Length: 136
Image 1: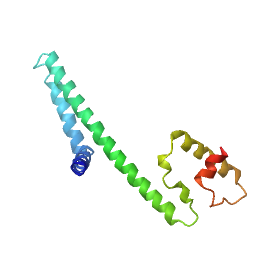
Image 2 (image 1 turned 90 degrees about the vertical axis):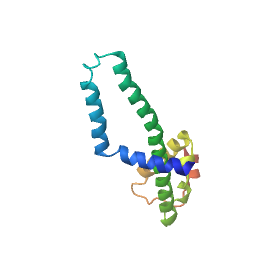
Image 3 (image 1 turned 45 degrees about the vertical axis):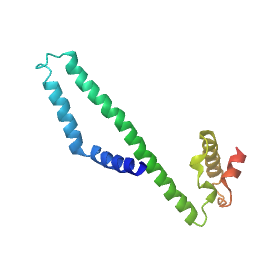
Image 4 (image 1 turned 45 degrees about the horizontal axis):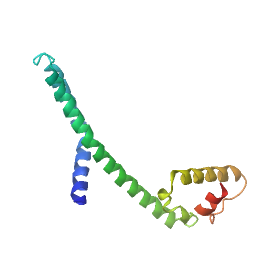
């Protein structure tokens, strides 16, 4: 089920991001606007565009979120591999995306302090995430 959804989400996302899709959507809106006088600007005429856009927006939210989740996970995996492969990188940073917002903010603050405090010093590569979090 998940593979089918991912396949559909990928295809719909790829199609939705194309200029032709925007042009088609714009043509539908223009056609709807032009048809207003024919339907005497009725409530049903307005309901058609409102319902259509609501449904499309509702479905696209899930597709966009799915794409962003996959992109973020892939990016994290790539960054984790770089951390693992670089000799002086701190491997303690692998997986920090699972920390709480507060822990990540403490980590960022500690890193900023470390960088500002080492104007004439070399950073040590053996400081771990845990040590940085303890300092704050």
